[in-house]
Image (cartoon, rainbow, N blue to C red; front, side):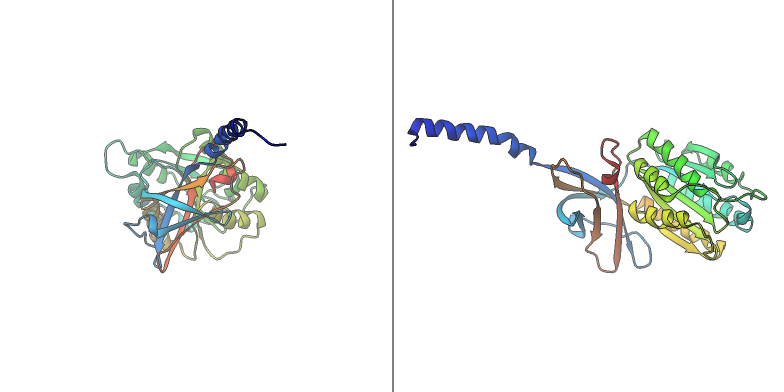
Length: 301
């Protein structure tokens, strides 16, 4: 059957009009990551731009649009092992933590980063609630004592802190855990802990002190996968005297991060994995998506 010229033109116009919403829905949207870029000595690399980064979602390359220093306020929970096994580390805690607190809270009036201090021996206990006050936080540091006959409850603390962060819904959240190799007494499976961590949108950084002897498989999986999947770091030091240096490195990394914004096609299915890398030689990059509670947890890692 032949179609007349006017009818054919009308049908073509209808097809173009009907297709327009599809074209609009395919337009790119923007997503952002907080990214650390460190040299081979672990120091942050300054003054980077879009050409210094690559972003892939499920192995599909995305266009990097902008790169700027990350200045969004941080919500930082510091978990400190004050179990009996940490008895020899308390002095070093008290030396390393004030320098870390000073670095991440800053000197300007009305500092926006909030820090809390939580003991994880015997049970998770708040030593200083979220605040930017150096005096209040250092007072919490002075409350650190090893609890006799107490084990470590790191996994319990990670769940409780993650749930608290999720309720606050900050754009930028961090958990820093200092733990000994004493016995882990939390009765939590690793998947429950990882699910809570991902739902919070927090980046997990862990420093383990002592020779690795902890036999909790769930704990080891959480420390390994939790740091890797949230763009955090996992350090093991054999003597606590090295804690001061490591905490200064963590502080420098957090205050030297970038906010990397990239474009992605609109899709009903979020990516399973987001990977950020740097094109700089002898440098490493790791990052976590800007926390958006409306996005699925798997898209925030």
